[in-house]
Image (cartoon, rainbow, N blue to C red):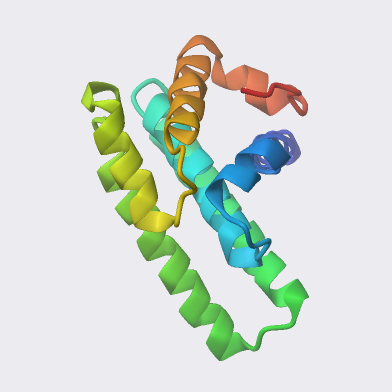
Length: 160
């Protein structure tokens, strides 16, 4: 049990680390809000699940999914929101997450313009949204070449 929890911590920390890329954040938004940061994290998690869902044990991914959203809930609690607000925010974040999953389901078959439209649906992107599209294209390629075990061992230091 401890080993698996440690793996979840490492995967989560890797996704958070990727989401904290300052150059990526500056493309997405001018604001530095908790919700914007969570949205960037949700995109990374959606691509992560999309890549590993077919060749990873479903129970393992489900337990990580539960861990992932529990960590977000704990972060919201740390900010100081009350129980009612937390429940509403978590429902909103989970709905947004499923919306992202649905929209990126066939990401590799979409033209870059359509990908930009998907990202623009969630963010007011600055003029050059091709940069963020290329980021997620590169991230998807990276995921396809990187075994899940790499995410479970320690924090990766990769920038796209």
